[in-house]
Length: 220
Image 1 (cartoon, rainbow, N blue to C red):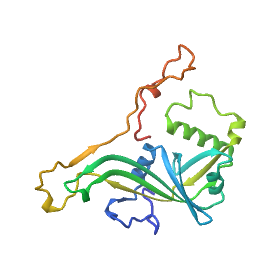
Image 2 (cartoon, one colour; image 1 turned 135 degrees about the vertical axis):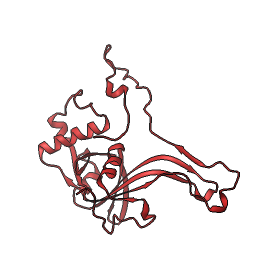
Image 3 (cartoon, rainbow, N blue to C red; image 1 turned 180 degrees about the vertical axis):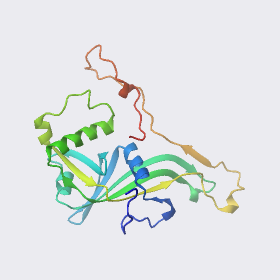
Image 4 (cartoon, one colour; image 1 turned 90 degrees about the vertical axis):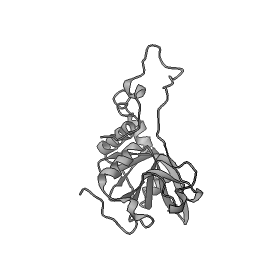
């Protein structure tokens, strides 16, 4: 299907006009971001933990050490709410009340499962590396068997998801448009600075193109 079926949890209640259920914009947001926040409840105590992730088709992967409390809890099948947010601009209105932010966000609900199949786990680790820096996996040392065993990988199927997006200028009260106050949008974007070599880098090793030209954008 080209879109997600809205559910009671994924349907936007506040400003529903900003809701997006088509898969393509949801995937674009997930592919551009690289940090998600994972929310879950343990014995009545809510936790929200930031972590890296990667998308492979209709699946999100997260990973970490086998000892990770979050991952060990999630693989038990608790309900998960995972979010990714990209900030595109500061929206400055003529009144303090109507200031806002242009953003793109995704919310995913479901239950994560542990990836036990060796081939899928290997592909998930590759996807996680490539999501961080496309082209990196082919250049670096591949994980050893011990490193793979020490890593817990969880998969969250993209079944129940939605996006919320705000774009455009400020929306002021009609009577405020005549106020002598600047209003508009200050665009924001993530820009990579000049790479810094590891002090122990072997002399003569040059910075590869995927480092020199690093950017965050839509992944295909």
